[in-house]
Image 1 (cartoon, rainbow, N blue to C red):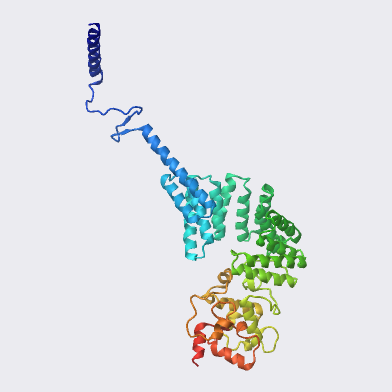
Image 2 (image 1 turned 120 degrees about the horizontal axis):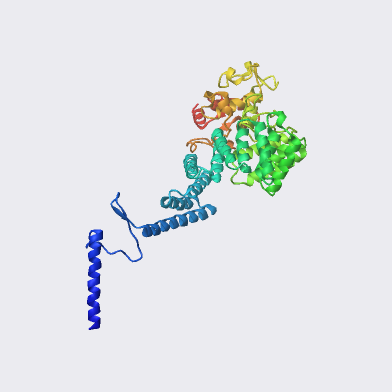
Length: 480
């Protein structure tokens, strides 16, 4: 009885509370779904939706954790130099978290590194363009991203886009005036713009900030040893800085050793320069990443030092005469050079220099292709070995004869490889004489001595008289 009575009282009391709630709150929705235990809800009248902060926070946390997972995976793959897999993992991280600046930065590094290792020029261009876009996105997301600024500036330097490189390094210095690598990058850009005094100042500042910065020591030594302006050359200081750079790299970087050799030559110690440059030639030959031009230049410099001639300037332009730097300041007796352009110029000069005065007079021009006025660059009425070499370099670069001198000279010369396989029907001697495998036979390859019958044979195949027998000319000569 007591329990029933008590229960009745409770029901009356509960009914009273419900009635009060109806009066105060205007009733209740009988169709409303019960709220999950442990979850609160908030109404969004504007969107007409119900927001679940706890549930959304959990989902967001899971997404962020996933992005972080793929980022760390991509970073590890990048360390292992598995660039395609790294790019894929970092792309998934970016898809999960488009605001993750570091993911864009790391993916840019992977793209740039893959471009460095590729031999496909079109692929290199594509990867480089994507890397620049990713660096820019990382900087947009985080304007103070020092690493992204530095790497983008460094990439601009490699592309010879010096103005944009300068802008990035200036911004990096503004963010952190004690960042030594920023001064190195800006110095490289300034040197490319031939602002040598400012470049040296930046390199010295980098050394002050980071005495163990090998690149700063080496680059400063390079300017001090090879600058075309004498006021910036200092052989003694160049040797000091180059030695420090080699010490910091455990004497294992052949390009740094090459700078040391150049510094020693500038300081007048040619014996030591020859010894170090001989080692450079050997190391460059063993380095799979060193291209043919690097190896060729190393051999040419060794020949220069053996002739007690310092190598002041490794730029693409020789200011005195206008000949590609790889072929200038060489004597006619440099017969040990492996530069095919120079050797062919020597052959032409030797063949047509009838009075053996070391130059080609206008009346000795003979059947050679081209206009005399274009070949006689200094307008002195005769062609020197340098001018002959320039002419040969022009004719071995497609369309070069149509370029102005400055544009041509700023290109690095490379003996052109054959564009495709040699055509069928060529005589066996063609491939045998093509010792440098560039798909053509130059004069120095065809013969070392030139009796009348040998000259007549060469002219039979050299249809246009440019001193080079191409496969097409060879086939045409066989039909005569």
